Structure formats: structure tokens, C-alpha cells
Image (cartoon, rainbow, N blue to C red):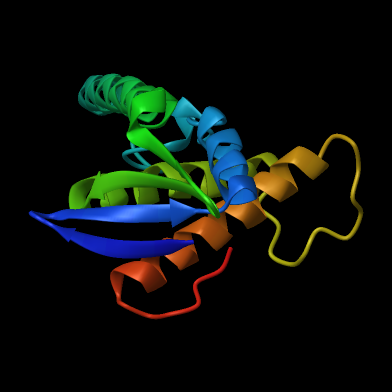
Length: 158
């Protein structure tokens, strides 16, 4: 994966064929963090807290729906992808990269939650936990590669 400045707050993200396939597979998993995961408070009760929690839940649901539409628009549009000899190029803004980092982080954290929030490595790979482990690890790899690219580091291979 490479990121080339293209001027006017735009960059060109270059992906190999397999990288594009993996990224699109990850983005299809969004959103992964369960809606009930974000709590205003672990203590307390009452009508005000319940009402505020409902507002938070509604706002998060709206944001997730907006992000899901953006995912589909940004990467499902074949016109945005330019085939190259070594893979694919897609033009993105800095804001789109930052947003992509948020979406990938949701997939990573949601997969970690689905694995039971392990403190150590998952010891036994099963048919049930393998997709979550794959998504968690690959999201983290893409996040790190994008962060390295934004910082101007070289060799951010996924």
C-alpha cells in the first residue's frame, strides 16, 4: 500500500489486488461494535440518565448509518478505482482517510469484543472465532499502514 500526494487535499491510495480485496472485505463488516456497548455511565440510574443514553444510542445509530453509506459510496463505486499494472489506485482526501481509520477501528474493536475482549492472544482458533480474529488483526494492520502513510513513513505493507 502506498499513498501519493495529489494536491488540493487529495492523495492517491495505491493498493495491490489482494490489499483491495482484503480492505473491501473488512469494510463490509462495518459496523462491528454492538450498539449497546457505548454507555454514558456504569453507575447511576434515573430518567435523566436513561434519556441521555437513548440520545447517545440514537446519535450513534445515525452516525453508523451515515458511515455505512459512505463506505458503500466510497469503495463500491467502480469509477473511483483505476486499474494499474500492479493493482489499483483510488483518490482520497485526508478527511476520508481519517474517516476510514475510524471505520477500521470500529471493525477492530468490534471483533475484539466478539472474541470476548482477550487480554492475551487467542489460544485456540475455531471456526467461530477465526473470522473475528482475522478482522481484528487485518483492521489493525490497515490502520497502522494508513497511519504510517499519513506520517510519511515508508514501507507500510499490510
